[in-house]
Image 1 (spheres, one colour):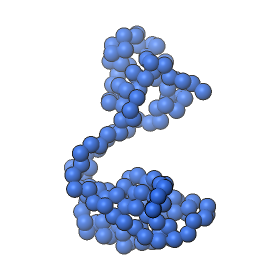
Image 2: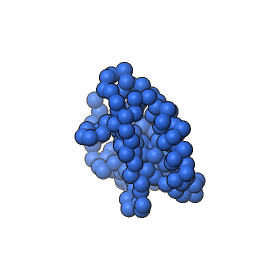
Image 3: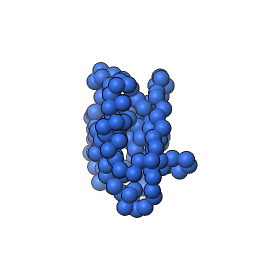
Length: 153
């Protein structure tokens, strides 16, 4: 397995901040020529450290003003039921993140919708159709303090 060195980590930090940065700009920051920087980035991609390049969108401009964290408790716990829940929940476009968690609940969902009415529709018509959901506990975001996609390196 490939283990990134300190230069690779610097490249990853820069690419997290701006995936559109050019190889030339990266080379200037890292103090290497273009070719080794290009080869390093390709190696990081090939070895799975860089999984994809994306555009981060402004959710407010797109009308997604309400974020809800929804804790889910399943009625039953079998491998088959868990797999079906994951399949069903990942198909819901309003769910932007889903985590299998420990504690009082089984899953934590991050849901983005336009407003409270849209969340009610999500709960009743989408989440409500997912089998084996025993209970759902919603926590509404009142203000966003920190939101980053950067992994600490």
